[in-house]
Image 1 (cartoon, rainbow, N blue to C red):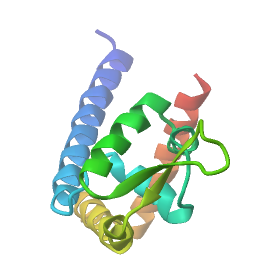
Image 2 (image 1 turned 180 degrees about the horizontal axis):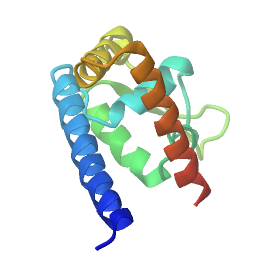
Image 3 (image 1 turned 180 degrees about the vertical axis):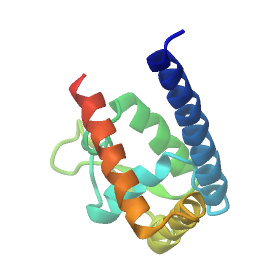
Length: 145
């Protein structure tokens, strides 16, 4: 085994564990509000612009349309969203927030912030900025490959 392989293995293991735990903690924080992890991204887009199509949501969130369609169905059953036919084009469906979905516009980001604060506790402001820069580079590399 060489050092690069050992470093890669260490990174992979830590990154995998950190992302899994972050997802679990976020899911726990959001589920108390009737939102499952991943659904907050759909809500965020609808808080910005209500009445998007599933395809528009998928592009903005960065997932496939069938993934959004399934998620919207679950969110509709939970009373967060409503699907309605587009009045101008009967082939399209638009997704609209319910009152309950709108009410979460402050609660959900606050719950996410609490998870992030817990994850970054003990980091200085400079370390937080450095970590953000490094993760941005990681994201750029992944997007380029």
